Image: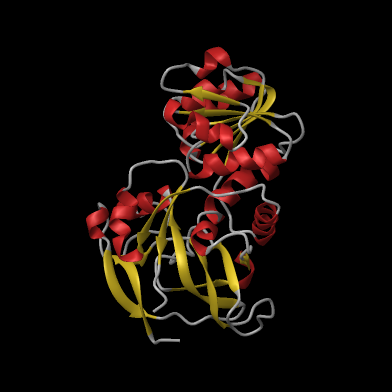
Length: 313
């Protein structure tokens, strides 16, 4: 294990130009932790939010990134699950466990699970944060099951395209909001309906929805109340958008649930099982060498996920 590593860091908040390739000490795993040589790490909207404002993690300097896929380099005291050379993937504890955009990342042993053979490291790195968000929203929070009518906003995006697949594995009827350009894509994931949000007001064509997963914001959460049935659930990853809706939702008998994703070995294991069964396949929108992190964070929205790749040395 080298004493030093390359990482993408920043000394100030701002645009993508603040990201720098720097040399830092290689972290050492503590009690109950493993050190992972990072092969791939994905980029999420929350990386951009924190780069610009330090939203969840405060002031720089810091290394962003939560999604990791790689090889165990070293293990800390008391670790029995893994040994050097094992291939693992997972999400570092959110939000304070950031640091995936580096050649090496350290994290608690039990936020990782073995990487499925069906996935390469790029594909594996694309799953953890969006996969856990979708799993925790649909399965653990909203209890989506056989026959549930589920509406997914941003269905072609990182969280959305995984959520469509997870909802289908639960036996749900899935309605996807996506642009016309992405309609075939979301249908290929299993969506029963694809609605072009640029041409159609979904409140006029959708009703009796049991669960709505909202990741976009704007006026969508308020409009969502019009299509949810009494007893339905609106799950949003944008917590502040739900506050103004509290009274209206209560009057309609709708549950509001604001979700911040949590690192979770059980959820990761469930996602790995879906991958192994061929029921969950991440879509890679683009890959960038990790020195191109600024370009990766500036990439235009495309179906799926953007992933950073790391050299072996």
